[in-house]
Amino acid sequence: MPQKPDLPNPKPESRRVGYAIVGIGKLTADELIPAARTSENSYVAALVTSEEDKGEAFARAFDLSDRDVYTYDQFEELADREDVQAVYIVLPNSLHREYVERAAKMGKHVLCEKPLGMNADDARQIVAACKKARVKLMTAYRCQYTPEHWAARDAVQGGRLGKVKLLDSIHTQVETDATAWRMKQDLAGGGPLPDVGIYSVNIMRFVLGTEPEWVFAALHQPKSDPRFREVEESVAFTLGFPGGIMATGLTSYGAAKTTTLRVLGEDGSLLMDPAFPYDGLKLQLTDEAGTHQPSFPEYDQFTQEFNHFSRCILEGGTPWTPGEEGVADHVVMDALYESARTGKVVPLKSSRKKDASRGPDKPQLPGR
Image (cartoon, rainbow, N blue to C red; front, side, top):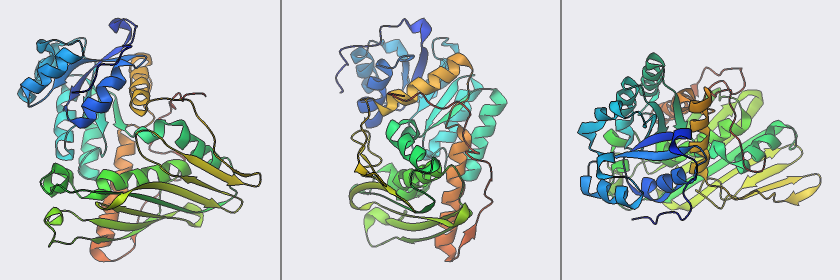
């Protein structure tokens, strides 16, 4: 059980957005509830879980009552909760669409963990359901809400590195539990690619602001290993962006924890190492002036997400990472799996519009 923060938000709940968090695993316990309690405009109003006893224990720890705990079968009862304006879905990937659609029918705005769905078609249906219900949908891409990643994007798009030529990114970790849901194809939709490799795909698209024109990939799946009977162990991939920019990525459930992003231009380079953890991000820039590491104020990535989405709800804005951004990553990942299956380069229809899948309302960043 996580410890209650010492300084919960002093603003009255009437001036903040109330969330029902759907799924109370480790991410919810360690990151989401503490982040919402210290958000400037958000708070946790309800919990949805399959484990009532666990939910009630969480409720008591975070100033909620047993009446604020719902089972999955009771999910629609949230329709009568006027203090619940939004839901945050933290469930296995295969359940995202069902719970987004159920939330949308209740008129609740939706913040959904990545990946948005199981594939591009699934994600498109999620977007369509929210549009039909006229509710806001945000894909929880926390790395697009950090000052470090925005500084990397500014360096790339502002010409600080000169003409960009190459990018590479690694996101690997060792998974030991063969019974975990992320190791099941019908629950996860794939192995490390939609779980951790998606960070590399997403942030390379983000820093460039453009979409790949083609992809190529290969994967390794040692079926003799009980962990990988259903999903791949490792994927190596290349994305071809407009202007001849080439980006390579490595992701795996069988290699030591590594998270990096590197961008190489004609006049300079940048390195993020680590690039994707919840905290401790490091950015190093090398240009004509030499090599230096910029500093940034302390912040919490999940608080940033809550702040941005709640601001959009309260002020009528469109999230920076809407459902369309989730769809865009699925389009790339679907093509990567097709390439790995066929051994061929897979062409993509690349939008020429900068940030075509992102919303107009940029996040407010610490220190900016």
